[in-house]
Length: 233
Image (cartoon, rainbow, N blue to C red; front, top):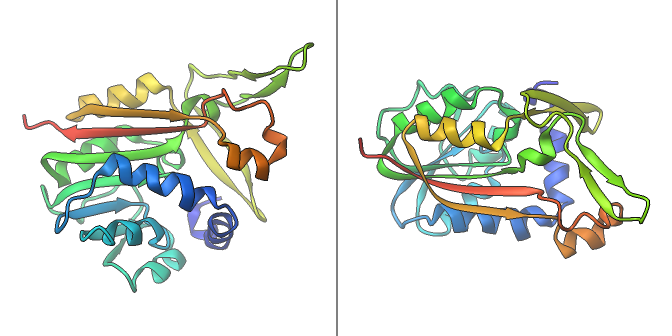
């Protein structure tokens, strides 16, 4: 199912999950380190929820997304462009001080073109911040398993291959693309991005209370956050 049919699901998903505002958004802000008056590109801006947090820091944000229903919600707070990532042909070279993706990369098949074109539109020395589902989590056929002693372990599935899985999303499904952490980091480096910060986390205690079915998975990586700086040459 393409994202142009998933607006209602996404809005409900975010509205009913406090972790998005309490954990995901703060992590993105920490990685981005937004500077007042700078202009940032929100890659997959959705309804503009994260952009609003960044604008509160005194910045300017331009959003882009495929889903027109979500863009209509965002358009009151920031300029937006309808596009299918990784296409950024509409943006001028070196137009932005930085860019960010928040739970978007895992829904894009082509990370190589994305990193390359974001490098084109971000100024040398600029930042790229990413928050995503950890590659361990997105591997096809990966899942939690419980051993004979009752300890929860993680079945790695087909981690070292590329692939995807289609997960329930309301009345539809949403596709999660998998690449290894090595593929992700190498694609970014080859496109001119120097890694400056890495964050990994599991299921938080707050999430554990809300989703008791995650019991025992605290030590399994769930979220990854990355900060890169645009190489000058």
